[in-house]
Image (cartoon, rainbow, N blue to C red; front, side, top):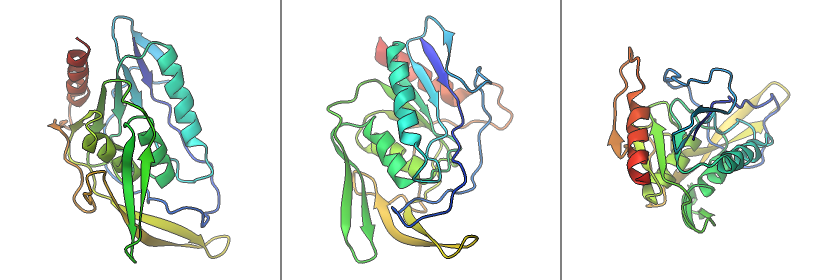
Length: 238
């Protein structure tokens, strides 16, 4: 069963706070949407398929927006519908809240490190997953528009070998920032730390190379990146 999750999740406007460090949203190129479901809802596309494509607008800008709860709910719904494998589409995803990236990765990678953060004084802390084991074969679509918190997820999946990355190299945003409100109309954003993938690699200004490089021509009428991911998952399910 192939289910397409394409609902765009947007944060409501709110004043920035000093709560947790967050990754910055960045403007980056977006890939065309080849989804067959234009309504933005989850719907069955092919009865004879065995995997799920989740196109997610991950990582709302604001930490008070309950994105992780929404993602967890949708993920549970897909499991009830018989999900056997998953395509996670992070193309054109500019990232956002650090905690949301960690939470999503924690649902996909096995017990162990997700990301480590080092501040300017050399203090280090690590976010970890408590998932006993990877539940489903996983393919992740990435491109130059995949940045920030989206790269936390992609980096954790690649380094832990929880799935394979398909597409092109990601943006390379490996810093953590805090936003401090000065008044009702003004705020200052300060870089407070850098983050590292589970293998200890900084992707800042470097990006993450996919496991399988697949270019998507601008005039493409077929999503060859998605096709490569689907073919891989079908092989895993045989």
